[in-house]
Image (tube, rainbow, N blue to C red; front, side, top):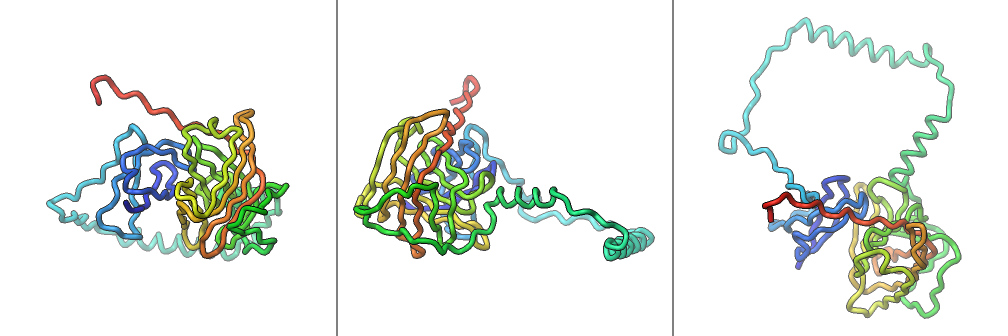
Length: 285
């Protein structure tokens, strides 16, 4: 068994899976659409990311290269000299107008620019500073207590403050930002099938437990990065009852990565049910 990465065909989220998961249907942790895990690549290239297909939909086919593998060269077209001169003059006029825009236009500062900037920051999670608060990281849960505050902590040395928690099936995602690809957060993949099965449950995972929920950290540097943990971490978690399509809970999670990532506090997770599979047309199996 080996891990490989593939991309969600709907939102582009990068997902890590095992080769044994090939062909299985899983919900995307970001857009929650059901997708099919593609076959693992035979030639492992870290720069190559496969694309999954949406459940019960054919995987998009790439256009075959024409002429037996030789790409067609587009025929050369003549470009009128007069049109070229007009384009050059238009570009020069546009550059001059842009340089003198301050002398002709005096827009008043309004709230729209700030609103757009805040909106974009919320979508992407913004640029998170280096964490400088109290370090609660520990792999010994004997004295670990849930903080009486919303989930916060440090992921890959970046300050983490919870913006949104979701339960898709039994997959708990804690993230910065409310939408878009996760640029700072984590997902715990519990073994239950439905979120309702977690209601009222508690769990404690020790570093020497051989069977533990899979945890994936996600953060962004020059590009989005993820790291998977299947054991060796410490976690205790409590789930409250299901109410108003949400489950409240508390978590204390410390991971053995080089940055000693951890999160702790309370959350209220929105419950999202994976989309049911579409019925197949008669005669198809």
